Image (cartoon, rainbow, N blue to C red; front, top):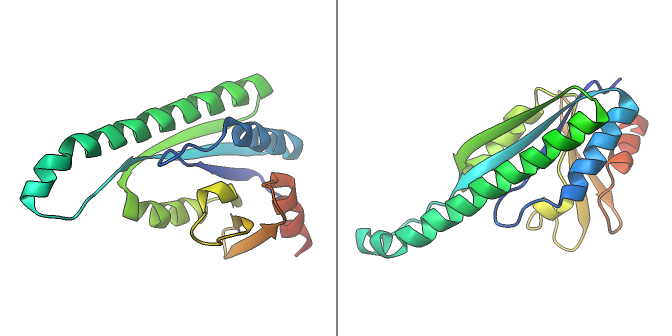
Length: 162
């Protein structure tokens, strides 16, 4: 199976994905001659509570949403610049969602691509203590574990060989 349509998920909240991930994804797309899409979310933090607590934390919530928005736009701008420099077909996708809906939306986008990669730093609660990467194909999700680092080539090799 040839990978012609790759998606890389870029986290904007609480900490943004390192820009080196963008460079790695672009390098993989260049090597494969594939179209590359970058997906990032403007996360809206939702806090359950009483109407009094909502009025007290409204400023904090809007500050966190603004942080997420800025991180997402900066990551997508860095992606655009790297993809333009490399001369590959690319697209950027900016979604707005509450934090609890982001994983479901990511899965929906992943189902439309040949390969989707997520740096393990973005999934700290799913596989604590290990570096992992989830690689989806159009049919089923696969989990690839690597020793101590995120490497898109490792993911591709594991997918091709499995």
